[in-house]
Structure formats: structure tokens, C-alpha cells
Image 1 (cartoon, rainbow, N blue to C red):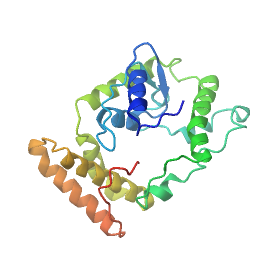
Image 2: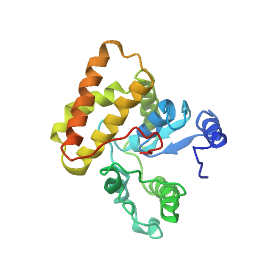
Image 3: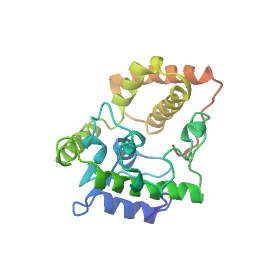
Length: 229
């Protein structure tokens, strides 16, 4: 099931699914998805509160040091992946580091396949890999903890603090991509007239630092709300 979230009807259906306590949802690396679901305002306001969610990634790693799916798939028997394309078939970094969207509607067959194939990759992990502690119960507990942390940080200040701590150590496209995300983050807070109180000075400093990183590589970030990252 692919939903076009530019459609109010599709957004409503997604909200019904994600907030249902009766349907357990299994994701891999759900932190960014949950941030979007909970706090996205543009181009479409979502405000979805995920429930009955298990981030499977947290069964094999911690929130602070997550194991990427590409690395996890190296442990999966090849026969379970033989009909699937490689995880890196779309070079997201190429688009994001140039401040361009990687997903453009209408989606190409390659992009649709990429999204659907992730379901099969998760199935292959579930079928072949056993969590170190024997079950996914710990992942469920960690997921609930992650959601609580997001709930008490509606402006994403912790993400900005982490970027300020690490960005000087970053190099290449990843550094540029993260600076673009951070700049869009701070501008979104301003567009929402977020009441930051004493944190406003910190957010202004983060925005200045991110702008300096992008200026050094001659990238200008527009305020186009249709840009999807």
C-alpha cells in the first residue's frame, strides 16, 4: 500500500493506521519517520501519534548507535535476498547533498520498487535473524522510550544539540546533507513562530553555523515547502 501524503484522504488513512492500537507496525529505523509523523507542518500538517509500533532496528542496536539495514542484510542468507535489488540502488546522497529532492512525484518504477522491496528486506531479517536477547520485546520497550523522548522535545532541540556537537568532525556529502536538514529545521521553527524562550539564542547560533557550512560549498537553501527530504 503506497499512500500519497499530499492527499488529505491518504493522510487521514495513514493516521488511522499508525495510531491504531490493534495493528502492530514493524519498521526499521523509525526515529526519523516518527519525527515527521508527529511534527511535520509543511507541506502537509500530519500530527500523527504512532502506537503499537516496534522499531526492529532497536533489537540489534541502540538508539544512539543504530545498525543500518545495509549492514544488517550482510548477515541474511543470500537466497532470501536473491530477487531483491541492492539497498543502494538509489543514490540519495547525490540528490540531498545538492539540495534536491530524491523523491519526485509521480514516482518512477525504481522508486516504487525501492519502497516495496524494503518490506521484503524486513521480512528476510525477521525470518533469518534472532535478536541477541531472543525476542523483539526489548525493541518494543526501546521504541516506546524513543517515542516518549520525541514527545517531550517537540521542537527537535536535541537533534540540533547533537549536530552542533558532531558537525565539525563530519566530512564530504554527509556534512552538507546534515547542514541542509538543520537549516530547514531552524527555518521551520521560525515559520511556525515556535515559542522557544531561552532556547532561541541557541537555535539562532545553530542556524548561523549551518548557513556557514553551506556557504562554503555555494549551496543556497530556499524555503520551498514542497521540498521533500
